[in-house]
Length: 120
Image (tube, rainbow, N blue to C red; front, side):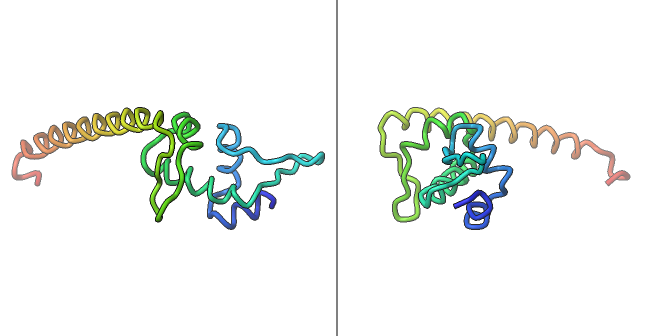
């Protein structure tokens, strides 16, 4: 299938599909004309990429993890033990980001609370 059909079937813009290719996440075949041709299995690959992006992973990490993640009963399941450490590191990174955001929110709440009543 060509890129337009993959875009329609996955709901992912063609520009993003080209970006995924640049990042080494998709590997379409190329016709002599330069057109990209995708396999039926690329639909599942794109959907796994989207889920991993939604989970907070960047494309570098997804490139490492993608070959070792399958969908089972609607959930992403790692099938290679070596990716568990990568996923745990990413979770720790997200935990740190959440803590930093909570600290920022608390500081902002203190600033707002210090405002004179006439301003509120």
